[in-house]
Length: 402
Image 1 (cartoon, rainbow, N blue to C red):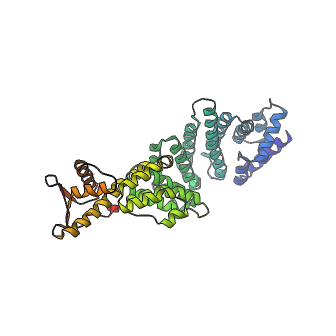
Image 2: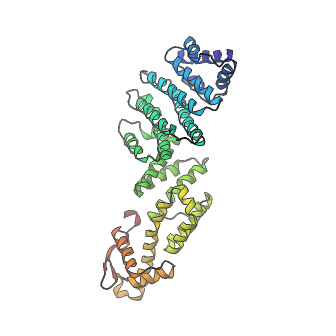
């Protein structure tokens, strides 16, 4: 009991002195001294009234905040993660109720610690629910809780309170990606782009990198490849070399996007980050070998699906087909310079068959028609003659412009 009393005295001192750093340490669920104080007290007396103890020691509303926090620590100590999440939710709600009335942001760091705990405990509670054969739903509740916190830190005239805005946006991104509710991310992106949101460069590098990574991934899903390249390139370039795993994670999405835009990574880059599964893919796209690409995608299909890149990589077939068609055109131009802008569909069909991706002439015509539609090729098809007539200028536009 004495240890818990000392802990609450320290909490009271931090609140009265408005010592944000001390308050953050005391509300950290990984604080071993706090955990021991609570668990030893509960071991001595299971009926102890934590709310009453906190009322005696702390001013409002921090008596309520710490009462719930102590309940949370007790539940964690006993492995009751559903109860721990319920307690940290109550802690957060009580904290926010006071925070929004404050004219300063002295307690912001403590609020960030509580938010981190809420997200972590929601994940652990869901794992416990699934293990018990029940439906998980706590991470969804954590998303709603974090949105409450976000609104009370972003919608304020106190600029310093907005310091945690990007951290909260990134935390919500992580939850929405895990729950596959990606549509909820778009309102957050719109909010970050508002003039009332703090300047992006004022936030810590780690938060900017993580934000750019998720925005880039969203752009991939939307087939907005230029936007995806912009944000993923930023994330890769600004991610610290001390975190090679994170740089590798970014490259898993950035490489397919660059390939779609006609930019090929070096072998050195693939070796450096041990992205060996991409080597055959890159080689196939460079050669225009559709069959080789199909084989590579099939061989690493499970890996690419687990990474969430398989659907993007499948779109490289069009890039490989364009490369093969471009080589067929070069061959035709050498054979018949007077008709250098014409390509026989029959010859293209032979090229496909030669590389192991044979198809009938009607399928070949559909493939070329799709390449023209997607502006990978400029020209038109003479169905009667089974010939593609290419534009005399810029017949193969840069993939980055298509």
